Image 1 (cartoon, rainbow, N blue to C red):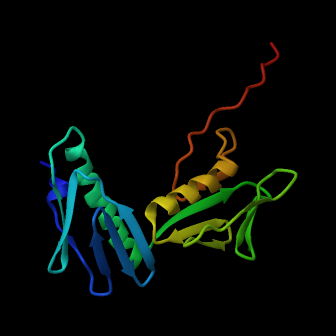
Image 2 (tube, rainbow, N blue to C red; image 1 turned 45 degrees about the vertical axis):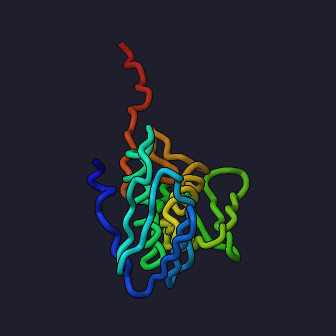
Length: 180
């Protein structure tokens, strides 16, 4: 039995939930999210709660049960509060800015790197911190990972783009051989 899967999901007042066949749609003030539910699971709405249960027992049904309860919870939370990831830029001359709707990064290459703004995602830049926010947690994390991939933090000086609060393991550089 899944401890996470058993918990019901509370539906806030400003959220509408539609369950049709194998698809769940969640609408709220920050947007609308849809997700297809596997045939092994049953998603139902009772009063102001969403309940996920196993429809038929298969090899994967127990693992999917807790996973989909969490995914639906993230959908409900995303359309109410939204999700965000913060990235930090470190390095001399490294900076970020917003040009139109796109994110522009100057991170030590001979050219600037432009990242297109996907639907439902917004960028904010404050000094050396980039904030990626939107209702879909998976999409926010994916866009943040793509931004980080432009210039990963390097282990010698720590320069690059990292998640806010991420610790980069530093290496010791070469040491000069002493004259004997």
